Length: 491
Image 1 (cartoon, one colour):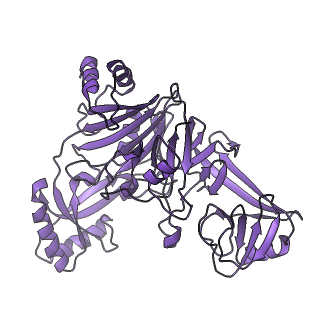
Image 2 (tube, rainbow, N blue to C red):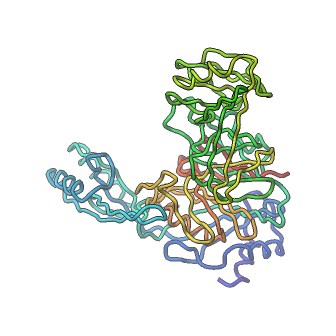
Image 3 (cartoon, rainbow, N blue to C red):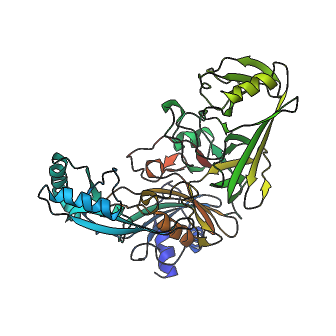
């Protein structure tokens, strides 16, 4: 596609926000977007529609590829997974053939990433049908299920192997030279409660927003908004880091990607010290955990002790655990050994210092916890210094499902000149958009010009909001409530 054709196409495009894009502005914006072919699939020329959101911010609707994938039936291994060792696959194959069905064993390789070697795995599958023959796949699945096998119908575009797409992405580019607003983070009404990105964006008057990092689905239902990793909002640490996990650090209108470690220590006025294991999360036996007023839930009601601390670090009360955090206060909760320490060293009327350090591991120094600092934890590092570097194992996502299979993705990246790129790739919509795996997500962000990039939470959590409208198509069919959000603010 020639530059002239591209600019003309953008100038005629309808815009999501309803803002007209003058020809000169369209030409200027077009020059910032890649002119090369789409980096995934058959590397065809994508179609792009650009919307000028505000000064320095452009939104691109990007489509590429076409649908050629069909369906198969995958028979699950004895451990409930869809892939396993050769021995497990052979046993599963024999079980299928005992029902009279014809099955095949498919070899696949989970690709090598920066911190985990490749892994050979095998799947057992029955049948192959075109996209329009989904009903036949469902009928076969029903027979196998009635025979006592655990199965699922798989759309082949989800596998993460060769595909022609299609792909549908939203890309928000924020030019460091022209943008005059700032970046922020939000955990919504409270840490414990989940909330939609659009709700958080509206509350803070954001120009745009995307969902943040992963949240804890393995804790009590009423606490599942808790981020898994570091969260800083306006200089306040509201969730501790998973040591070494990728994150995006936001200060004013600057954004940088790094890895973080947090160290939190309670220091009594008598000089005694005790490590604080976590912030605003369920406490494990023997842990000392700090709760802030943003928590939005009661402290654990198990045996132990709560110490209520005022804004000046003075111990206001020692109480029975299992109550809310008073407004303007913090609570140290301990059970077992930690409760004993509280009872020995934090008497009513004494003072305690909460020494909090958030370490930038790339720079080798602590972040200043000032009101303009915000941190959103990522899920997996994708690009570092312009090269693909996928840190799936370090970030806790080195499974076949996370590395190879395609899912909706929310991505954040920074360019050489400090500009920020936020992107969503929709998925789980057979025939419409297939999503991306980690390798493809890294390729996509590099194509967009990111020299550093991370994967945020994805799947049904993937959401991008621009001027109070959800501009992508969440795979659940509606916007999902999530733990936190990254905000683009007007000032």
